[in-house]
Image (cartoon, rainbow, N blue to C red; front, side, top):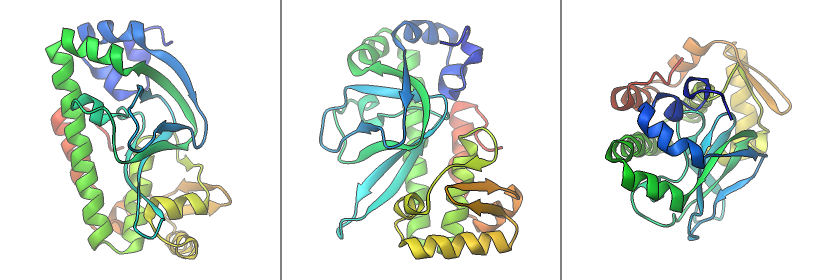
Length: 239
């Protein structure tokens, strides 16, 4: 456990009102989050929520053809379990770790106790849920209207916002799931972004080289959700 609130990597924990953090902190349990760790299972009551310090969690839905597609991500910007904050017990979606890391978990029962004890904490977490709604809406817009290079650029920027450094550890297979495209498309688009000197890609790793270039490549589909995160929570998400 970090020695002080300011030492936490998770932005929600680090920036929440000090009194609310003091209520929450005694119930936070350190948790290692290996690749593919299952955080939520569809249609199954959520038992705990997670505040990630490192790594990344994906909210994934099943398409009619049986393939998965990502509709939301959570890293050191926030927490899992938005349905719990809204009073629901479960979600129709799966949530699992796509980039290994670590964080802290709190049981749903304890979280509800603390939220009942503090209206300011409840309101703060509800603002975060609103940022997730906006992020999901932006993802739906990108999936429906953006070409694959723009979607890839947007996704890489979103991940870059939530990790330390410029290296993203992911396989092409995982990228295909995240974007809902076939694996050959992933390889082709990565080569395209490499040719533009925006990234470097090798087996299992993508390195961000030109962030401003990626923003341009995203063609306007990146930025709205990030601006709303800052407006609602007063925290800079984008680098």
